[in-house]
Amino acid sequence: MTKVRDNGRKDAILAIAAGQFRRRGFERTSVRDIAEALGMTSGSLFYHFATKEELLVAVMEGGVRDIMQSVRDGLAGETRLPERLLSMVRSHLKALLGPRLDAMTVLLYEWRSLSPAAQSRVLALRDAYEALWMEPINEAVVLGLVESDAVLVRQTVLGALNWTAQWYRPEGRLDVDALAQSMYAMLFPRVAAASGAKSTSTLSGRGN
Image (cartoon, rainbow, N blue to C red; front, side, top):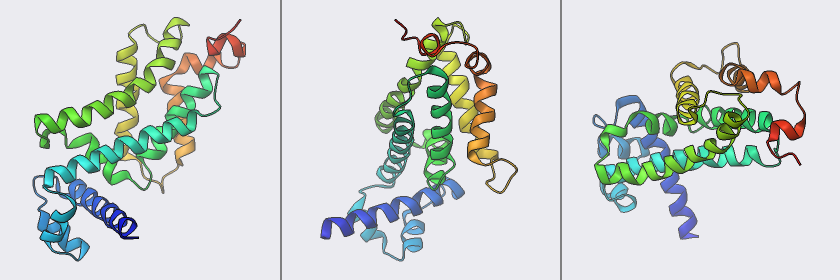
């Protein structure tokens, strides 16, 4: 039971820290600020995280893991290229713009606050996530449905999706599903156009 309570406390710390880091910035947020928002002492917070940087790394790693799991879950059962790419766009946006928006925003914009060692640690997870995108993008390259520079395509796609954290408002005219559909059509226009004209085997790249 103690472990469950500790995990719950750590989750609360991470959520509050993410919100503080997002609103104030990492450098302007003190351990005391986070502890006071949680109704605890700074010493109690250090029981869970040895340094403020360790707390930032935990927030960022949690953000990467959440978005990676969201995309993997969305891909389950999808075999055709158009549905896979649409699912990845939708799953990325749902994770980015969902309840963990604070953590995701910190992940995107607080890189300079990390030491080189901490950057390497978080970047290893980020690289693993970006690798998920390379398989379908490379497949689309082979089919002539995106530009030949697959890395540039991935960077462009993720850059556009990540920028929505700055401007998207849930009370606006588009919900996340509609936003995903529109962005998919804009980012992968030839895949979207070809999906209604070609066979399942052709678009999946796995025909006999």
